[in-house]
Image (cartoon, rainbow, N blue to C red; front, side):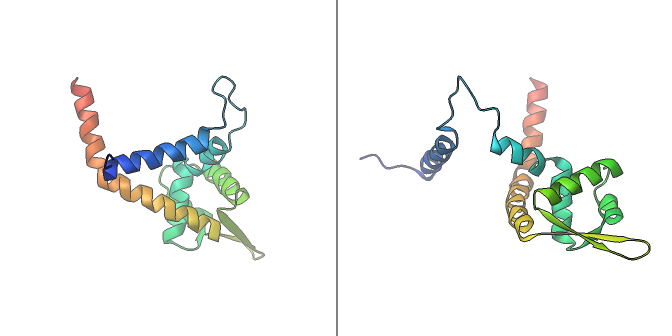
Length: 142
């Protein structure tokens, strides 16, 4: 009986997850609608990720506060992303009928659950960013 290493076990587990995800898809006739692609298109967008991360750190933010924190985003793109993130349930929008109108954004429980996964990814990125940069430099030297 062959003993498997931790890496081999991880590879087997990963292969099983991928097979479960794609096992029912006919490679010759892929589906037009892919829920993974549909959800990931917004959830993995650089602006959406930054919005969610900032709302994780600052529990309640107004539009202009988010705009100042998410450097480089235009008002139009921010408005679009906030609407889409609200529609998908990642954040809530609270409108206060004051003059001037005050609108605040906060993560929902669903948004916080996604934030937890984003934090895992950002920790991985922080751990391996030097590796990525050195790989890029090595690639350029080839």
